Amino acid sequence: MIWDVCSWRDMGPLICLETTLIGDRYLSILPDHLHSFMSIVHSDRLGQFQQDNATPHASRVATKWLQEHSSDFKHFHWPPKLPEMKIIEDIWDSLLHAVENRSPPPLTPMDLWTALYDS
Figure 1 (cartoon, rainbow, N blue to C red):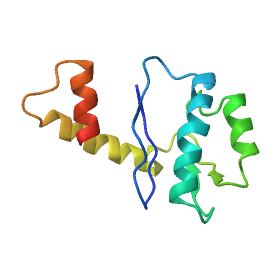
Figure 2: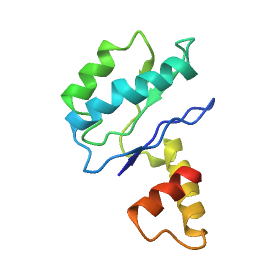
Figure 3: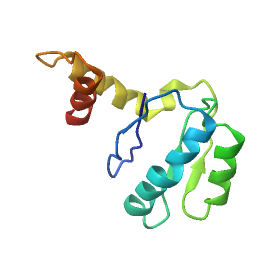
């Protein structure tokens, strides 16, 4: 699984997860990657973080962490089941096309990671 964060100002790091994302694992991403990204890219504290309502995103631990850090950046609550409002879907679609057009195509997980990272 790949996790990413983006902004109209910049792209964040791609994070490769070896397992399925659950609330506790998501909690390890938020301070290390999201908070750092928002602090650097939106140092004016005007950035707004959007996520879908996937189970790990809506977990109690993640929700609590986001509330505790609400002075650092805003967490914009989007209505559920509105994929047309998620910019990340467009980014994933672009990445998919870039990877599909590679020659030779990625054959291993490491090849896929490299292709995603390069794209």
